[in-house]
Length: 186
Image (cartoon, rainbow, N blue to C red; front, side, top):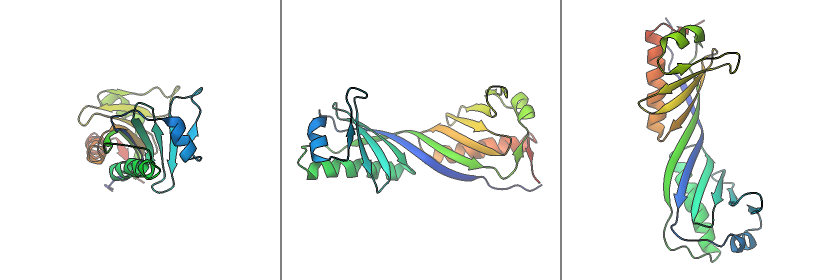
């Protein structure tokens, strides 16, 4: 048996943040013409950074949502950079942003194929309806994540709050697939 280690790539970290004060989004758009703000379509202003490559939604309540980063660290850095740029242009922000990771999405390759029909019958909290979606949906309890499993051995893990949870979820699932003889290697 060829037991390979899963290749895990974090593709998106979504983090929320708050500075605990109201913001004037029109003033921000005047000072940052590159931002996108169309209040008639969406109440948030989009502040894009090239480094780290992210988009941060800023709401007048002082709440923010940062997407597109590839790590927890990068998400925190992106929000801090946005706050720093706002302050530099004279937007008064009293407190530093408090950042909380909400969701980590990762892409995984197990290095072998998965027998989905058998897995659907064997794995608890799993749903597989191939006529509606080609992957098996597995809900993990600890850590609380949802993993999409494809016959190719590719996975998508979502719902993790920490990178450690991503690795724990994937390794727990991989071990379960191995133990229950649901993996096939060439």
